[in-house]
Image (tube, rainbow, N blue to C red; front, top):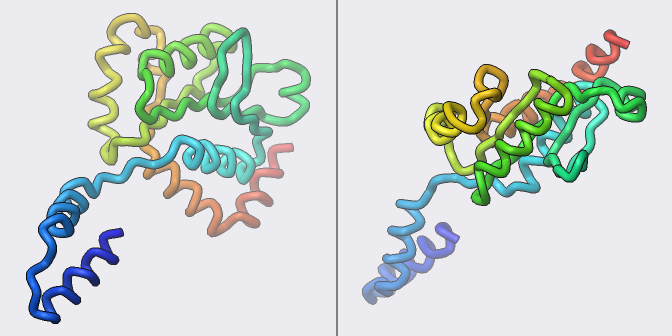
Length: 179
C-alpha cells in the first residue's frame, strides 16, 4: 500500500498538482505505524513447521481437559498415542487475553509437569518489552510458571523457521539420529 501511494504522490508532483492531503496523511500513518504484528495462524504454522523439521510429532489446537493449546510437540507419535507428556506447549499471544494464555500454560504445567512452556508474543519486536508485559503476572497468580516459561517474539520464531528450512534435509537427517 505504501508503494502505491508513493507512486501516486510522485505522479501528482510531476503533473504539477499538489498531492492530495488524504494520501499524505495515510503515508505519515504508515511510516509511524511500521511496527510488525504477525498473524496468529501464521505463527502457529511456523511453530508446527519447526517442530516437524526437528522430528517432533506436532498437533495444533490440541485439546486437553477443556483447555485448547495452540501448538503442542511430542517426542513421537507413539508418545502422543500413549498419552505421554509432550515435550513443549506453545501459546501464541496476539491481542486477546494474556491471562487466558498464561492459564493454559499453567494448566499444561499442572497436567504434565514439563519445562517446555512457551509464550510467543506477536505484537512486540523486542523480547525484553514482551517480558516486561508478562512479568507482573508471573509474580502473582502464575508464579509457578516463573523459571519455566520462555517468552519468545514472533519475529524470532520466523527467523528460526527460516534458518531450519534452509538446511531442512540436514536437520531432518540429524533429528533421526535420536531414534
